[in-house]
Length: 559
Ligand SMILES: C[S@@+](CC[C@H](N)C(=O)[O-])C[C@H]1O[C@@H](n2cnc3c(N)ncnc32)[C@H](O)[C@@H]1O
Image (tube, rainbow, N blue to C red; front, side, top):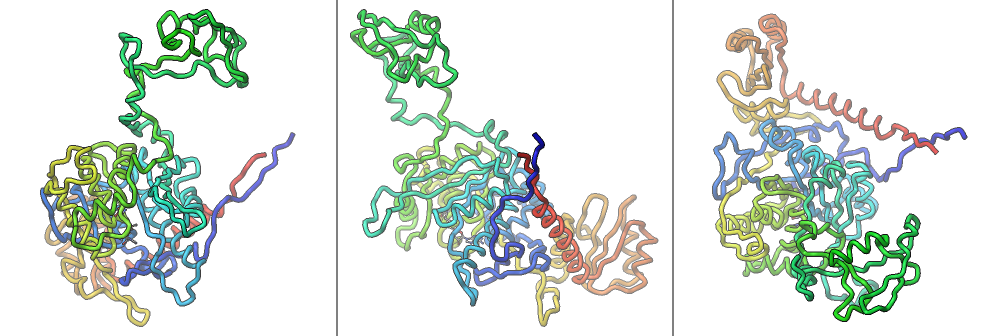
């Protein structure tokens, strides 16, 4: 029969899906086309504070990082600034994110559809950046209530691939009942996607058995192999069972038993006899009960495969989380949506190991960073609201470092204090716009201009007079002023063997371009900000073209 081909792809669409959203200063969002210069700009990360033990400034990227600013800006900086990119691109093991549903959007033509579209664009763009940072055996855990759940699954399918969906974990967030509503919601979802599901399964950790599970094992017959629990010896008589699994068993009491209706034995007669000889079948104290298989504690695999329902008595409730915050800050109104440390501990236990990097770019009160610190993981936390960092995340993490946080998972992890972290600020834009013309911002002068320019061009900022930065054998010189032929000579004269030069200047003598090219082949001159802005537009157009081409590519399905 000839194969029929179908084309098209399964995807969720929404208003303005092809646009980007800029986080603006009032903690709201603004729609812009993808080629808008502000979408491409790479923001600097400026040192703001140090807490506890941290590294020297030239290796600051490997400190634990608490970043103040919008998640997208911070994530782009982590993957584009060379000092951070070498540390984090493809090297973050786990991202747990708990974004708000209410995006704080205030469009004049506000409607529910737009609100969902803002949320979807906001989360898609951040997930795309998270994907760049994650390692091949990494995973993302997206915490949501039911509002965006089904839409978020579609976005995650687009970003990570439907085949990398791992599970939707149901967290029983409360055990109380809301009697005024139709159905009282008592759970949240944590959707798990892997970068590569096969690799992730091999690398993920099992859960330690709980006290309750251990207590199911005992040794009523003094078996020298130790404690055991018993399992039924029968199984459903499904397709594939062998006829040797249907037989009559004579119990030690002499009574004869068959498998229950619709069932067979789990073993063939021969295997069953071997199990009896090995003392692995239990017939009850009187030797007259249905046979059961003894499963010894010391033969149980070193842990339990996690299940997808996490009850409150194992990982806490929203009330537990509020209590943890109140214990640390008794005199302030608690942060409104913290998550319990035990919930985050379980996620980190399954999906990371000590020393791995854990990311949360919607940090809130700092739970993920707190638990990561106590569990010996390295961490990056990003939070947009300065007040939240000042009042919760930073003082909470300070107490963790100082060993003054006895709550949450402190006992479980044996945490006593230590380590430290670095607070970084996402720098403001290096550009300003007036009447449609883009200028350099007031702060972008001299050294700051050099650093910001290096960031846009992917050069590592390494001031070594007269150069500002380096990328392989290429040097960058940034001149906040006019470049004459004499200045250009000075710069090309300072180059080492086989080095090339990029000169960026706010004003350029027209003769300089040819001159530099001749003096140091492969070198060139750019006027700022115009040439950077032009490059953003071209790169973005090219990227957009590629992305659109990919998403419009027909999927061929054979039937
Ligand atoms: C639901 S809370 C996270 C709570 C956190 N899991 C905890 O245990 O405290 C969401 C946080 O994301 C922050 N946020 C919202 N939009 C953001 C953005 N674009 N970038 C960074 N943080 C953002 C909010 O200010 C809020 O603190």
